[in-house]
Image (cartoon, rainbow, N blue to C red; front, top):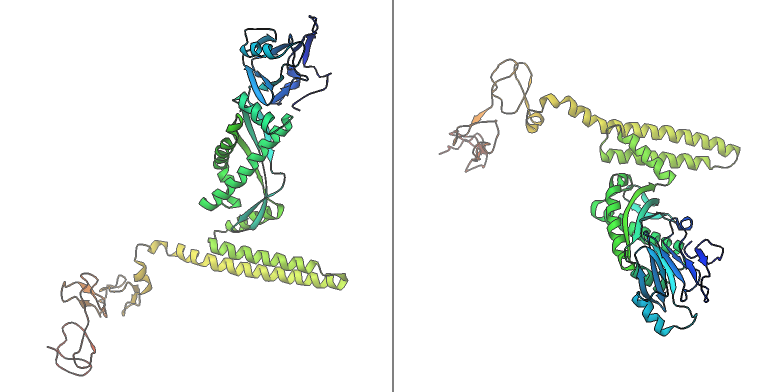
Length: 406
């Protein structure tokens, strides 16, 4: 609690000592705890005494304004005329009229916990709309007691520490929601990526929150220990996706296998909801059939997904050959061995491979039927001026119409 108005609360030490009945006030250590502020149970009057310790401020507050702050340890009497504000008050206050309210404010770093009271909606690209529960811890301290009392007590009208801490928690949760949205927009962060972003989330959140609370005389020192809880069904889905991913499938094949798994689960759930004994039997049959069908579908999809990988692995020793040579190779007419296109001699039997041509410009050896030289880019095939048939370099008569080629 922030303000303890119970007269039995151990916040005073000593009484009497003058005709006016002076009292000495202090903030009892046992009552401090994580409370950030404490109001002396009554307004102070002349001859009262205030004890200030090293870890606290004493703030005099009157008519919505801060009169002065005692920030040095010691015992201060309201009859002391060497405190300027008290000298001024002596001119306007007589007798035993109240002088001012006094608030103690802790100077040390305090800690708190925050969490979303309601699940936070996060739209994930794989799992759709996911409701997250996020918890964490934060540390803060009052760096400007005047701003703190003026804004929190005077402007907002908060009356205890619980209200102030609740306000801090609401600011953190609001900015946390904004941080997650920013990371999703800029970095396409998904729910399964969040554990890897915890440090970045904490730093971004700290910066955003600090901007919002500085004007209240508070500094957020750090935010950490973030814990993001996924709904049970989403966690199961993540585990399923992880199991499918362990098979080494491509992202697209993982999604297809996962969708097949989801479809099978939906069919089994629908089968379980059939009513009656006959419905139960039919549901069991449908569930069994669905399970077998989905299993076969997943096996087929996984097999298809893994087949290109197996082929790729079996072809790894031949990766030194160009892909185009493997796809458009020729066979040796002598031994039938597979050879790259354009080969002049067989690498298996050494036999000569017919059908090659020579570029008329750069004299490079080129595969038969080439229209352009791969070495210099010159056009290889020309056309007959009479029948437009394609002519190979060096021919003297057109093989189509027999016309003489000049």
